[in-house]
Image (tube, rainbow, N blue to C red; front, top):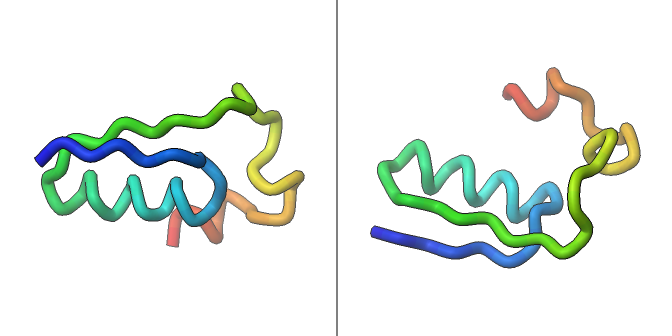
Length: 50
């Protein structure tokens, strides 16, 4: 299944990750471009990994 998600914040990114792990082809759209840190540094790489 091909899925497009609008918004690459924490919820959209998690949704994209879970759908991808379940076998879906996911395309994530966000108009803000590349961020230096997710959530301004509020979400650590350890939290994202779990």
